[in-house]
Image (cartoon, rainbow, N blue to C red):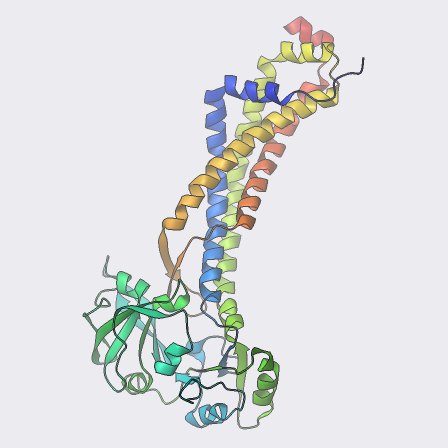
Length: 392
C-alpha cells in the first residue's frame, strides 16, 4: 500500500478550530497588518482614480513648457489667440469653438469643521469650460452669470469649507463672492475646486496671463498633429498634453509617496505578525508531538507532515487576510482629503478597492503565513517517529 502523500484538509481545519481562541488572536494580528497594507493601496488608488477621472480623452491641456502644474503656468492672451485658431478644435451645436482660457490660483480658506486654513484651487472658466467637462453637473442652485462675482463650488469644497455652501458668501481676492451653485464632478478632482467667471477672476487676482488653455479635438486621433503644430510655432513656448495624461501625472508624486510609506509600515508591522504566527505554529507542533508520530507511523512522509503544518499556517493567514480585507473594504464609505504635492491644494477622494488590490492583500497575507509557518513545519517534519511516540 502506497504511503499517503497529503494530510487531509479536514484534519488541518479541525486543528485550527480546536485552538480557536489562539487562531482568532493570531489571525487578528495578521488581519491588522493586511488592513494597513490594503488601505494604503486603496488610498493610492483613490488619489490616482480621482485625478485620472478629471480628464477627458479628447480634451487637450496646454500649459507653459516645463510648468508641470496649472498654478505654475502662464499663457499670454496673444498665445491663447494662436491656440484658438487651430483647425482641429471642435465646435458645439451653435458653432462656438470648444476652447476655454482659464486662470487657476490657490486661495487659502478656513475649514468648516476646525476653522484651520487650507489651500483650495480657484478656477476661472466659462460656459464652454463647463461643457468641456461632461462629468460635471449642477445638483443645487444655478450656473454663475458671466461678468459677476458669482461662483459655484465642488461638493467637496461646499461640504468642507466655511462659506462655500449654496447661498453663502466667500471672501477672497478683495471681494465677496456669492455661491449660487454646487456641482458634482463625479468623484473627480474638480469636486475640490471653486469656479467663477474667467475675466472676473483675472481682474480680482490681478493676473495678466491665463494658467491653461483647454480645448476639445474634433478627432481624438489628431492629438499628435496638434502637439507638433504647437511645438513648432516660434511664437509659442507651450506644451500640449492630453487632459487624461496631465491629470494622471498630477497624481504620481502623492500616490507614490503614500504607497511607499504605507508599504514600509506594512513590512515593519508584518514582522510582528510573522513572529506571532511562528509562535502559534511552534506551540501547535509542541502540543501535537504524539499526533506527528502517529501520522508518520501511518505512513505519511516527512514532506506530507511539512505540507500539513505549512497548510495550517497558510489557512490561518488566509483567515487573517480575509478579516483585514473585509475591514479595509469598509473604508470605501469614508471621504478623506489631503494636500496634493503637485498643486499644493486640498484634494478630496475616496478609498478605492480594486480586484488587483484584493489579490495583492491576500497574497501578502499568505506570504506572512508562509514565512511564519515554514520553520515550525520543517521542525515537525524532521522529528523521528520513535522520539515522537516516546514523548507522547
